[in-house]
Amino acid sequence: MIIKHIKENSFFYLGFILLFSVGISLGAYWVTNVSIETKELLIMYLNGFFNFAEGKIFNNSAIFKSSFINNIISILLLLIFGFTYVGIIFSPILTIFRGFCFGFSIAFLVESFGRKGLIFSLVSLLPHNIVLIPSTIFLCSVSLQYSLFLLKSRNEKRYENKRQSFINYIFSFILGMVLVVLSTVIESYITPVFIKSISSFIQ
Image 1: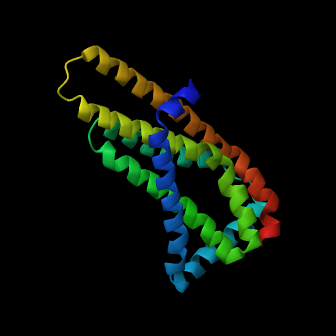
Image 2: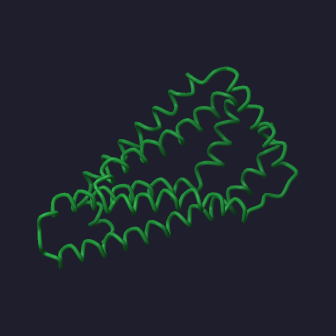
């Protein structure tokens, strides 16, 4: 069913993958426009974080709560805007923004710390984003498709068809939310272990 769904909506998924890639490129490029003072502040902050991570125990529940709140806000906005025509605009913007943040983070770490920065970005960003990025693309695509469906069927009176589409829409968001929660668990309880194990190497 999943493969069938992807094939039937391949145009949307390819489009959002492209938008996410554009966001990554913009984020990586934006690193070159950051002022020297800002870079120095960020580097100082990261060095402080590395020193903290080496000898301290992470508050996993606090990390989970913060990450969950940030992610759930995006999900709720996608869900709500999907019921309006705003979803046609918001979904692509959110995809580009997520790509921008991802690209900027990796590019800055690599530029500032070289090979160590690359290793840290792989350890700190890759594990949960393996789940979060596909989930984001999936939810953005679903939100956009439902907005387009409402736009095309605004004059139709076949309520059964609209009801089924609504059920599918809600079910898709429940599935996406489960995946996002999974990525949050990875970020909160697994990623800190990796970060702590390499923090002394990064310094």
